[in-house]
Image 1: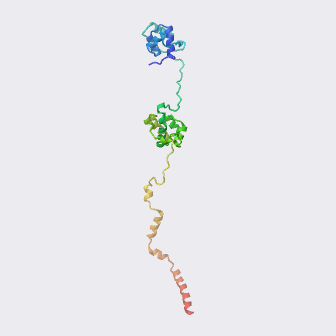
Image 2 (image 1 turned 180 degrees about the vertical axis):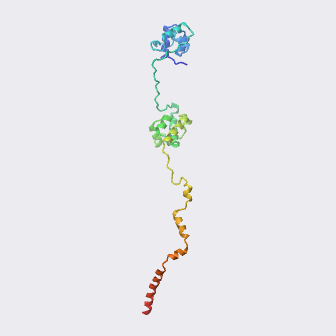
Image 3 (image 1 turned 135 degrees about the horizontal axis):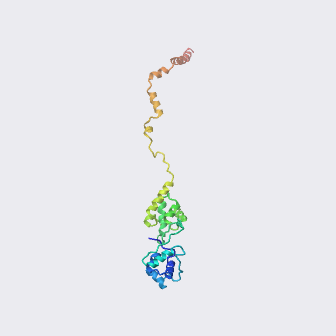
Length: 240
C-alpha cells in the first residue's frame, strides 16, 4: 500500500477543482473515502482549505495526471522523490501513563524498590513514567500517601510489559559488580582438608623416636659430677 501525498485534503481540493479525474481516482490517490471527495466537490467538506498543486510540489507528474484523465480505471502513482528525506527519530522520553493508571504508580514504585533494588532511578522512570523526586519520596517514606501504599507488580497494573521489566532487570544485573564471597561460604579443596598440618607431622615424628636415642643424648659425666657436688656439702656438715 502506497503512502498518501502530503496534505491529502488540500491535494484532493486541487484535483477536484483543476482536473476531470473521478472521485474514486482522487480518493484512492489521497487515501480518502469517495464520499468525502464528493463532499469536497459539493463544498460540504474541507471548506476554507486552499488547494495544493501536486505537480509543483513534486508529488505527481503531468504525464501521470494526463494518463489518468484519459483512462478512468488508471491508478495514480506518487512520483519518486529526488531527494530522500531521512526519517525523524522519535526522541526517547518518559513513558506516557494514562490518567486512569497514574494513581497506581506509587504502588508500582514501592514494588520495584523492594523486589529489584538494583534498578536505577532512570530505569524506573523509563518503566512506569514517574519522576525522580517521587521515587526519592517513596524510598525515604516521605511521600504524602506513604502510610497507605502497598507494593503491586507494575506488570499486573498495566504500567509496563514483562519484556520491558526483564530487560531493565537484566541490564541492572550486568552493571552490578560481582558480590564478594563471604568467609566460610565456599568449601576448601580436598588437598587442603586432607593434608596433615606441619606441626602435627613434627609431633608424630618425635613420638616415633626410640627412647634409646634420648638416653644416649644424656651426658653421663655431667650427671656424676653433679652428684659429687651434692655429696661434698653433706659430708662437711657431718664433720662439723
